[in-house]
View 1 (spheres, rainbow, N blue to C red):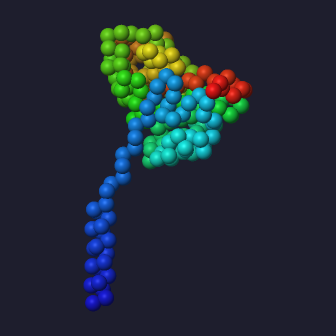
View 2: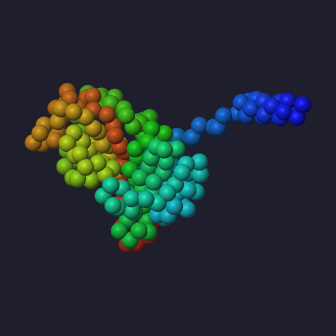
Length: 197
C-alpha cells in the first residue's frame, strides 16, 4: 500500500511538472549604432554591470583565444556577446556580437547572407588579415569586414569560401553567398578617461 502511494505521488509530481509553463524564450538583444541591448558607451566594464543589462543571460569573465580579458554573455552553451575593455579596463571598448539571439539594424542577424544585407551593392570591404580576426579566429582567410549601412560604429564580418589567395577578398559573385559571422560595435571610448555622459 505504501509503495502504491509512493508511485501515485511520483506520478502526480511528474504530471504537474509536465503541465508547467515552459521557460519564456530569451528576448532578442537589439544592436544599434549607439548600443547593444542595454550596454552603452557609459556602461562600466564589469560583470555586475553587464549582468544587470542582461539579467536572463549567463555572464562570466573570461578570455578570448588571444588571451585578452573579456566578459562573455551566453545563452546556455552558446556565447552571444564578447565584450572587450579599454586599455585601462574601466570601460567598454567594443562588443563582438556572435549569437543569433541578437538583432541588428533592419533585422540583420548572424548567419544572414551578404546579398540579403547589401542587395546588389558592393561596399568598401576589407580582408581581415590579422591573426585575431573578428572574434579570436586565427583563420583569417575568407574573412572580410564591411561597414554597416547607416551605422558608423558598426562593422559586419562575413565568412566564406572563394577568396583570392593573395588579397583575401572574394569577387562580388562569391561574396553574395558569404554569411555574417559577427557584428562589431565600437564604442569610440577614450582609453583612459570616463566617457562623456
